[in-house]
Length: 222
Image (cartoon, rainbow, N blue to C red; front, side, top):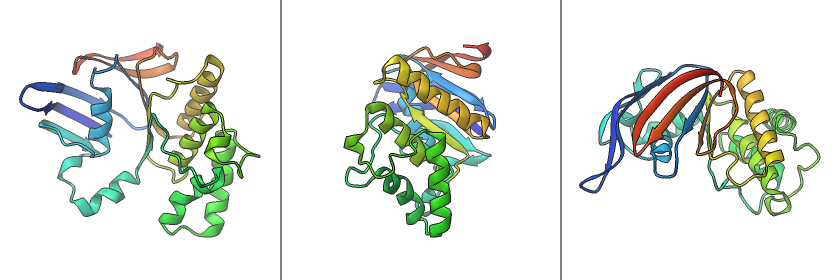
């Protein structure tokens, strides 16, 4: 599904955010990309969403070189990815329901399809009854769950989540992780970028340090 082949990303003349990184992610995996700040996690995310290009190597999605796509083809490619950024990037003057439906409206979806999809994802992220609230009226955990709902409403092939539990307490962290596990069980490939040690059964773990891939492992219990 996703293939990194000897990928390096250099900034300036000598700083390498990634150095000769290779790995493969299969369909429907639950993946943890772990490492401390500055290890290269965010660079991998940016390469996957084609926000950055590699200095060397190739990033492929179903065999297609992501960075050979024409600019006009990028929106279609990115529709296959649901992204939850660390700062959530919610629209402050739109309600919970409007934040979620906005993505489908921009793509010209039918009103009936929008209503059904919004109802379904609200159930998944456990925000039913809060459709009319605005982001500032939600807790940090609820904002995170709203960002997840918006990312999955178009049923992407992959959901990419940057630091899903970084600013959450233990209870909300567990809730968010349980929701992401549920999304995975429904058939979506889930990739989490995290500096925390998260407990996930049957996870594919990629461990980065100083831009290098140190471990690529599959564990029954992480």
